[in-house]
Amino acid sequence: MRRALTAALAAVALVTTACGGGGDAPATGTNDGRGPITFATLKDGTGTVPKLVAEWNAAHPDEQVRIVELPEGADGQRQQLVQQAQTRSDAYDVITIDLPWNAEFAARRWITELPAERFDVDGFLPSPLEGSHYRGQLYSIPHFTGAGMLYYRTDLLDRAGQRPPATWDELRAVCAAVLALPEAEGMSCYAGQHDKYEGLTVNFAEAVGSAGGEVTDERGNPRLDTPAATAGLEFLVEGFRSGVIPADAITFKEEEGRRAFQQGGLVFHRNWAYIHALMSATDGSSEVAGKFGVTVLPGAGGPGVSTLGGNNLAVSTFSTKQATARDFIAYLTSVDTQREHAKGSAYPMTRAAIYADPVLREKYPYLEVLEQSIRSARPRPELVRYGDATAAIQDSVYAAQRDEVPVEQALATLQGRLAEIAQGS
Image 1 (cartoon, helix red, strand yellow):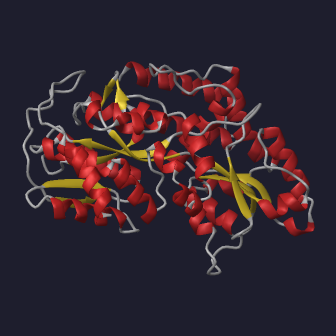
Image 2: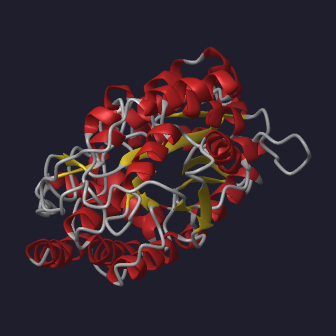
Image 3: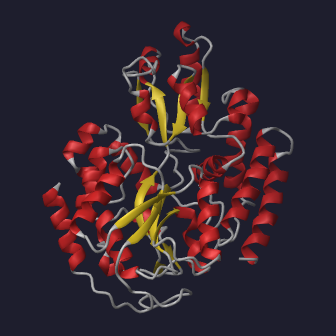
């Protein structure tokens, strides 16, 4: 660890403190002080982030980092960060933001523009890095990333003589073969995240993208009046109507779906990488340990696309110690630190080198599939008023899933609402 830390800090030592402004944000450099800083971030149950921060603190006695844990849910995290920004508080120096918030926080000048040359950006996976920009300028640095994968029961597919599906039609056909087995009695076919929350926005965007469409274009204009958007929503709605998606999945968030698969209730399940370790547990908590695999999400006519997940690190505009804040972000997202981080936790890292590491590939057998999914993943709608946009998506998609409104009506309503939101950004 000492060698990795030394290398990371050597790279950081090359950083100077002068920087010009750009875009819509105030010029960086006006608050380029140094000293102790506060890092507002997510709770780390593995203890890895506190360990890495302790390593930084040992090497920087005059620039100590104090961790402040944000609330557990994304809504609470955003609310707390927004409150700090709206009061122009300097309580936080480095903040952790969800990737979809990047545009909003940059446009509202709550985070500062960052000089790309200080962060070895060529080493990051392209998709997370692209989502870290706003109007062509870099405003945050990818810390964790993520993409959805399809978990499936290897034992049951083998018993039925089936292979993992690449298309939605294949998924339905494989399910029919597997569910005919005596061993599959009482099981259901597939579930993702279908409750009325952020996960539904993710699953809807994946369905539309996997049919060849997009929820919004690169300028934030809605594109839901297309055959692809119709096909994407139909996949979800018809899944509930036909029973391919079980009725109780209307209440599924990540953990409800994970438990359903882990307890042997599903043949296929869409979720993130973090559940792999939980389902591999050999302490009796998982009924599918050693009986499942992962593949990329299926699509309408071939492999589908995931919605990009993850968290970024940004410097608060109101920090008075932005030079230290930038150096700390450079350290925490360096390849050496990320490699150490990956050894201590299963959070998906953002640098390509991590996915080629043979030690980590052996520890996390899903890395190859995850990298493939991340590289083809797409960001959520990039709108300044993202909170309003995701609420509108959830309203329309949830109502359609419950068969309360026809697919065409749901999409037409959503097209109009997103157009208003985009114009008001």
